[in-house]
Image (cartoon, rainbow over all chains, first blue to last red; front, top):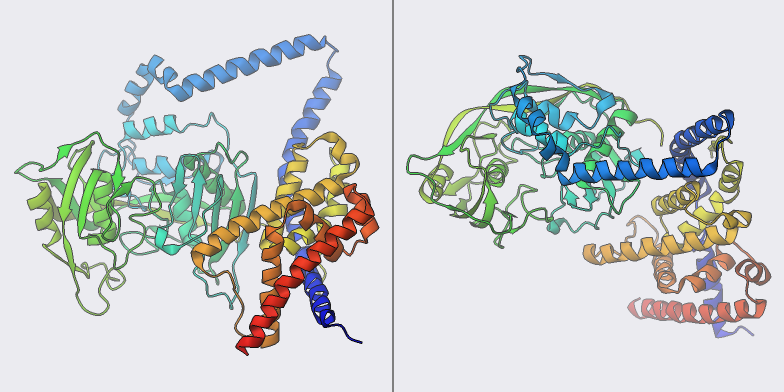
Length: 447
Length: 181
């Protein structure tokens, strides 16, 4: 006689076996991919170990304590130098070097070729614009680029001691799934000091694990932009549309990639280090070569109005304007100036740097590059009231494809609001904009 | 169906590593897939575990009999993956992601599998280990007992309780389906 439990038992058995039944073809492919990835990571380490073993075997035997003592001594000195460098002690001891650096003769060319062997530099060095002191707008909308002196100081602060930073493991795959209509995960990396290109809250993306860079279904253009941009904006969004400022990328079909990359030491890696690893990933796997060009673009120039600024310097926590009606949020949080849309705030209130103001103007109000010539370097307590008026179908940044004029209208108009409420003057003008020109790129090598 | 050739890891410094990888990678992968239900996650789990192994982040005596270690690691890392994923899924509210073109019965099967995986994700790692060894890897009670270092009776009892728990879950789901249809 059939027991009532029989059906349930059979179904359970069937389902449990189904749960553990991995498609063999997929499994073989992925295991092979992991094997290759592991081999790529393990071989260099083993080469070093073999060389070391060979050296030890071929040199005359020495007492072990000498090796131990020498190792401890070297480690202590290295840690001391590293700690001093991190704490700024070395830069304080050697002020002459920094003082002299800005006086280096300015190069005439505005094109900087990337040297793949120093992959950590392109994101920043190119922005020097041949030593020019003119403010340059970066592709990420970072606003005014650092002057040469600032650039050198920045490079020194992010120096990794000549170490070439690379991911411990990285999987890069071209994305092609005609059945997958999901939005994908925008490129973002999580370091100990926060998220590089924070994904806005409203996108409800799973949080990126510490020490990883992840993206799914991301256009290679955005990945390049994210890797070589020092802007905290999301890689893909900018004042002039999604593909702004990266040119020369072949028309790959599909152009989308899934990237999962993990740092060697996830618990300690920083955002800047992850970005350098991302740069090296593109250089190594895509054989990326590019140069940067500074082009003069029609845009806006922001200066202090004749009446003087109408806000005060503050020492409070630094913030970034948030989309929507909410209050401003601490800088680096996954909210803010990351996507154009209908959420332009009507009130900004908080402690902002001019850099944040410029970025917001570029990406949410003007959709053109903005050059900052205010000379204001501090943190300011700023309040601005501004309303967006609907301007019909197709309005907004997506509507402004020709970049001839902002498709949205504001009340009061943006220049007027800035002048009356903040004492800042906005006028049309030419703004130098940095472009990444891709000279060579090829489909990624296998994982 | 085309066959993908498995690239061997060169035996340069540590032959045992290559051997272990070639011998157990599919075992680890299958375990991870059984828990996570996604090839991407299974691949991540596989890479994480063997990277640890390659970097000698485990005790050397483990290499003498790596299977239990690899298996436990696979289950634990996979459970972590699905727990973090379920947190994200709660945010996205798309925990039950089924393809619309699938047949209704198949959809229900997918849903049940999904629920089973969720239930496995909530088990203690030791319990999940036993269940997967039994059903994903088709090991007998005796083999499981040997591998986990416990008695055969204990395994049988544990499996009986686990099955009872999963049957309850299944029955509830099936009754709910009957009511809606």
